[in-house]
Image (cartoon, rainbow, N blue to C red; front, side, top):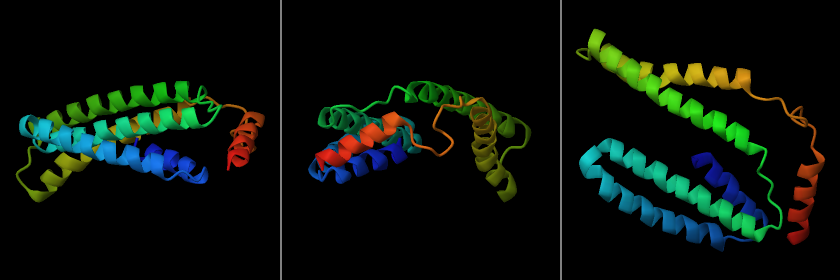
Length: 164
């Protein structure tokens, strides 16, 4: 989500529109503050992370909506399958991280500094390695992914250039 915000904002900058992403960014900053106030009491530090993620999701959604309205054609249908795989992998990574964290606490605890570091980094890294390698192995190979531009991509680029 966080990287997608930058990519979408740059699309607006390429269209010489700096106001739209700025307005959306300010709105999402206010949303982030509201989510943080709402979630920090019951969830403490985790509430801040959830607030950041929720505001980033709103930011991407609003930027995508505004860009679709600005451009006559913004074809993102090819991303649906990829996003589904990534969402399922993110859910699986979260479940694996929770399981690994619980098992670490059960078998090792966090009495010493190395055990504390392991309690943080092992549950954080292990699911990422597993789901990331699985996603790469199972990702569909589409035409045009060998570095060559597809005709649809060139048409969208030409439309963006014409509107500038």
